[in-house]
Figure 1 (cartoon, rainbow, N blue to C red):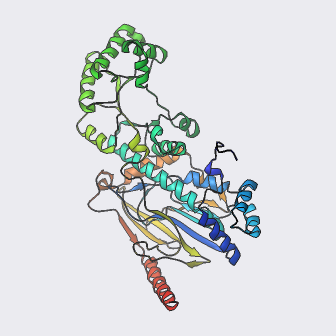
Figure 2 (cartoon, rainbow, N blue to C red):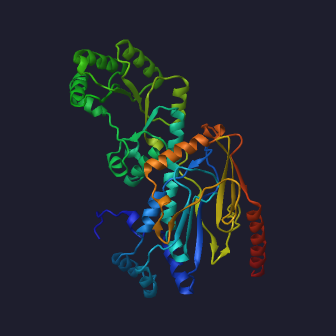
Length: 457
């Protein structure tokens, strides 16, 4: 296979860890083929986060629907010398035939809660671990970062500008999608616009201005070609650049339809105020101000609190890589096999046993607590895990459009308590409880496992 041939991980069953395959072969050799339940959780709230917004389910379901091992995959695996022909023959017919329950994309989530639940024969459920983790982990981080930026912007538009510094092409697309899901207005990424139907925004680069002998000439040429454009005014001197936009408006008269100027350096608050005053004095009240330059939610919050007259924020690198919280302690853990609850109780990594459901309680339009209970319990509140795939086929709940997921995310963010919507860590974290029945199961299984393991030493 040529090194230059592009590979789409979402269409390759080999996008998995080697130990998933070696364990799968061991399951096969031992005749272990009963149903397993794996749950995707994260263990703790990092940094100054008060919540996370779940995302990435769409890619997980698309992958599971198309899971298969190609002849070329089998030939490569055969050359590794690790796998028996019997196991390779089984892989040839591998298809995902299990069920998936998940929280809808855009749902605020908290530590210990299962975001995705895979119910399938253990070999199938084990092999897909890496893909499930990879897609939900990254997109959940990106959606959460974007939601914080959107909250900080307080109703002003937010545009994803981060693709060029994202960690790879796939990451750039997923950041654009996750940002839009979390409430951003759009993206600069053209392919994301095509693939996801996200509004695409473009301004101009400093190179366009520099390529012309005169800044005014560059503004006029661009505005004649794209009348409702955005003009970048800080290539040489920001205030002088704004004045040239005003001069252009006088020259073009009724033909002047420039919609926005963009500030990309300096003290954005001071420059935005002076620019606004100049534009308004020239009768250009409708021309908006677009600000970029290494922004994140904290800088945006300061600008908004200071009353900076900025209408649109373009957020790049710090959103694309979630600079302050780039990773989450997320895990895909076995909680049930062959109808029996399973758990681990390693230090600080205890996994609650058995298949679970999360019940969200809302009072007065605000979330007050989540209760993690057994899957078969009927507790107060809305059950968050929904059936999105049965026997390998998507259900209607697993075919939610991006627009619907976005509406759900924005509605759910409105239900967050005010203390969780702030950018700093809340003094009192959101309440997450474990049902009495699940707590009893935990203690019963803990004692049984301790007795069993100690008896084998």
